[in-house]
Length: 209
Ligand code: GAR
Image (cartoon, rainbow, N blue to C red; front, side):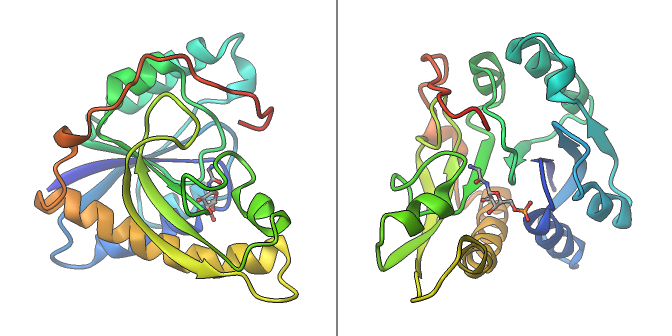
């Protein structure tokens, strides 16, 4: 059984989907802890499934590195086989990526390498393209730049707002995330083959990240 830590910042709808999938008999992974960088609404989903939560508020630390050290300390207590970033709106410090990668994946609401960063949906909409997408990647030290494990196109429809487009993307993200976690758990995806360049300088230009 693959043990999974999930890190969030927001509503945690993708977390919820993963919790539901993991509760199905025969699912080969189990969520052992949910962590966040702020008091996230998504904690309620973890609590509903009896999964422990860990709050490490980013704003209470002087540096990203100190925050990362504490996050690592608190998550590693649960010895997860895999860490999933599911709407964590913070860039992890390079040392932490180094420590967890390649067993560190991220879900992103765009068809990477298109539209990385904190505003993947807004940026796709602003670009006026007909299709965007959803991606699940291995995290490296850049911003949404790691190897792609799964992705799928999602249409942009006339009249879409950031909200309507994001709501169309999220069900695809959920499915890709669940399929990817399952494939990692069964060995169909071997993360050891995805060693990344963790350790290179991180490019954190977006203040939201
Ligand atoms: C998801 O769409 C996730 O891909 C995105 O935040 C949303 C969280 O939704 N993450 C990023 O944009 C990271 N760059 P949720 O809290 O409802 O699962």
